[in-house]
Image (cartoon, rainbow, N blue to C red; front, side):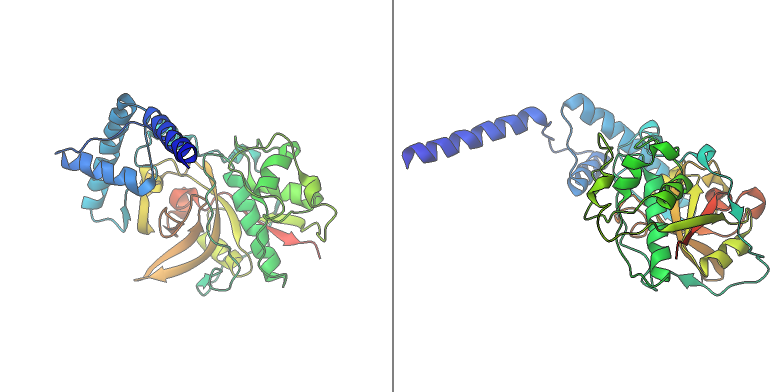
Length: 339
C-alpha cells in the first residue's frame, strides 16, 4: 500500500509540475477590467503559458471591450458582447474567414420572380435544421454551409433529418476547387456531392482539422446515395427572391464577416452598412421573419451555440442596392435532390 500510495503521490506531483510549467497562474487584481478579463478566462477555459502572453491578451481584451461598449452605447438595433473571440486580435479573427468567392461556379439562375412578399418561414421550426456546430480553427466554413443545405434538402424530400459529414467535404473535395482548412466555396461542395456519396457524421466524424487523406471509403459500401442532381443560384440583390427561395429550400450563402459587428454579435437585427459586403465567410440561410415591423433573414453560423443568438445571427433585408446587409444578397445557391 505504501508503494502504491507513494507512486500515486509522485504522479500527482509530476502532473502539478507539468501544469505549473504549462500555464501562467493568474494573481488577483484591483483593476476592474482585469477582473472582468479573469472571469472571462474562467468562463471560456482559457490559459496562457507565460506572463508576457497574459499581458498581451489582456491588452487585446481591453481594446475589444471598449469597441463593444462604444457600439452598445449608440442604441443600435443589435448588441455586441464578449465571446470566445474576446482576446483575439483582428488578424487572428480574419484567419477564420476563408470563404473563397472566386470559387463560385456559374450556375443556372433559379426561376424565381421575386414579385411577391412570402409569409415568414423558419426551417428550424419545421425540423429541417440540425443543432449548430463549431468549426473550430479549421477554415472549413464552406463545408458546414454545404452540409447544412443538403441536410435540409433531404429533409424536405422526406428523407428525415440526418447529420452528415463536413469532414468528408473538407478532406475529399480538393479536386473540385476547395482547399481543406484553407477555404473554399459551398458550391464546390455541391459539385463534390454531385459525384460522390455523402457519409454521415458518425461514419466520418469532424476533427476540426484536415486529415492526411480522404477517408471516403469508410462509407461508400453502405446504404448511401448520390444526393445532389444540380444546383441553382438565387437572383442577386433581391430580398424578395431570397425570401421566395426560402419557401422551398435552405440556402447556402456568403457574407462579409470581417467587421467587429460579426465578430462580437450577441443579439438583435443587424441593419448596418458598417458590416461590409466583402464576402469571406460561408453560412446558411434558414428562414426569414419580422419583428416590430423589421424584416430579417435567419442565419445559421458554424461557430458554436455560444456565439450570437445560440449560434445564429439575424440580418436585415435592406440595402439591396449595395448587395444587402453584410453582402447577404450576392452569393446564394441551393441544390436539387437527385431522385
